Image (tube, rainbow, N blue to C red; front, side):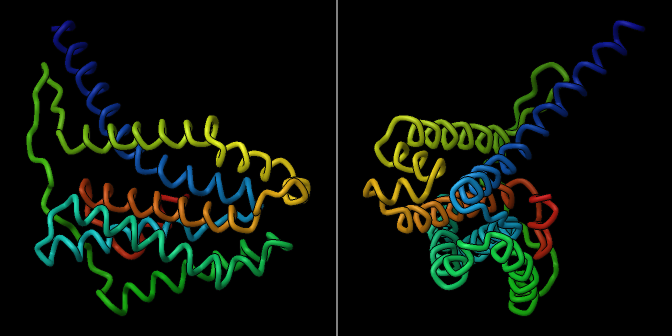
Length: 229
């Protein structure tokens, strides 16, 4: 009897680890963008969670229009990356000398983006059919293929990002800019262009995170705030 209880407890523990890893994968994609933007500009972009939410909404719209999930993911990445570019050029670039102002702008963006989505598509939950429905049972542990997909995609993105930052010419210039923007600019590194690139990259990753999140759970216009916190 005691052995049976221990076995059940172990199965529940493993199940919760797998479930937690899939959610942590989405949070990781947000964290990469937030970290890159903060490291290069000093701006804490609290609206990054709303970027993720927009990625989920774009995915929902694309799937609802009859497009496949892979195409919806690509559209979410492109749409949120473009949004990041527009917001950096139109708002955040004017706050680089005062990162606190950028932080305040990001707080305002939270309200704006949430209410735009509410006005356009109502505050109700949005969901899509699971792109993968296979479930494997190993002992007493149920392994959903969609959760495995989310974890594997995140591992690939993190590995690629790490490789880019540590080994590529772009990554070396980026790290130099993080250490000292003024000196990097004097050495010929186009720091302003790199800042724009980081905003676009971070936003695109948030869009990917939103696409993967809605594959796991329904989302609302207020999901982003919960995830970023």
